[in-house]
Amino acid sequence: MSRSENDRPLLVDRNDEEEEERAYDETEKVHIVRDEDDNERDLEYGVGCGGAPPFSWRKLWLFTGPGFLMSIAFLDPGNLEGDLQAGAVAGYSLLWLLMWATAMGLLVQLLSARLGVATGRHLAELCREEYPTWAGMVLWVMAELALIGSDIQEVIGSAIAIKILTNGLLPLWAGVIITALDCFVFLFLENYGIRKLEAVFAVLIGTMAVAFAWMFGQAKPSGSELLVGILVPKLSSRTIQKAVGVVGCIIMPHNVFLHSALVQSREVNKRQKYRVQEAINYYTIESTIALIVSFVINLFVTTVFAKGFYNTDLADSIGLVNAGQYLQDKYGGGLFPILYIWGIGLLAAGQSSTITGTYAGQFIMGGFLNFKMKKWLRALITRSCAIIPTIIVSLVFDSSEATLDVLNEWLNVLQSIQIPFALIPLLCLVSKEQIMGSFKIGPFYQTIAWLVAALVIMINGYLLLEFFSSEVSGVIYTGFVTVFTASYGAFIVYLIARGINFTPWHFKAES
Image 1 (spheres, rainbow, N blue to C red):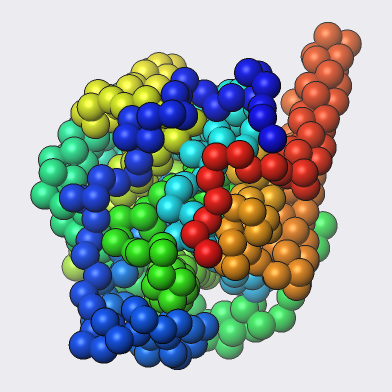
Image 2: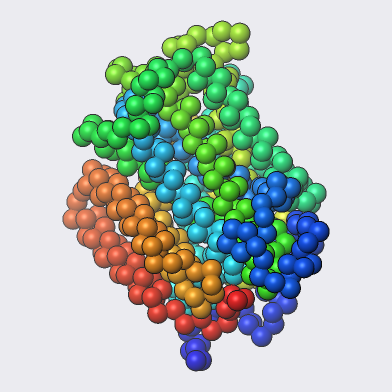
């Protein structure tokens, strides 16, 4: 079935396969060692769970990395701010929601990984191929806007941490410039191989774990209240907004694109079905472990602020900017002041998330536009898109904590708007046998995934409704919001309808 010229993918000659942009060159991929009996298994389907070879700790180690890079988005400064505010306002009562929101995030990320492994392409590439040019352009712009919004929060978080650790000697704008240089660190590390880069992220995650565990130990929260908070669902009119924030900041649009590309850093022979199943199995284990770690770290932050500030006059005024000082005033200096412990953890979160943001930006740009560009230039362009507006923001808002909080609310809204444009294409793609082959998800998995997507979209819709009803007034603004909402809803309906009727014309997964 031939396509019209309007349905052609973006900026690509499909007749020249060698010119296609790829997430990783073959020389960059991590080689997966072969077991002694692999040659025999190559002649058969394989044994073990799902047709894959038996479990191997050595192979799990080789597949470990992409899930931990993905988990950084669950630990960025925006999430930490949501954690501390939820703890201060709602106490321990939203820990159950944090756990289930992380579980929903895991489901989405496993689908993203499955897509990348089974097709050998990432979400941005497949969106370019399966949607008409105009729709692909809209999806690309939306993904870039989500990435920029997330990056501004992450860079500001790093700059706040630098300001804390230098006792205010370096202003916010100086911290932004220092953070901007991380793209060059990223490029330097990437030249030494993907495993070196993953090791750096492991150190940063370990730093966060130690810093926030130290704070957890200093706060000495109630074990029984913590356990009740995790196991017993509670929600009240006072905590509903924070509950929406907890769910809303877990699933990040750019992270859905990122994970489908990261899993391609391992060498997987897609012509051997059991090899694909093996990779999916190991990535499932690895991603689950990574998000358990991220949940524990988020739990540490939430409980520290629940213990210290729940039911106090300060609860509604705590944000990233003043959280360190409030902790210092509450728990004192000690051998190593808790203010600097907080600063170290926040800096690790900000630096790691800004580097993964740069990484995601490369995949999104390369996947949607499909043109080759030197990595340093593409990283520079990706960072500039976020750093330039962030420097402007830091200069304007450096002296006002309240305006930074308002900015953060607007950025959360910006990212909430983009969530359907990552989730809907992902769910449509992984459900299609023409694209996934035998690795498409079954009816039960599809039902659960769509219910989770619908829940997340509705929760973020509630957040948008609350925000615009309080912020927007006047006939002109109301008219603009009405037109935007109608267009937004129409495009979501189009994506769903288009996904149901995908007719892949270029690529089919290997059976």
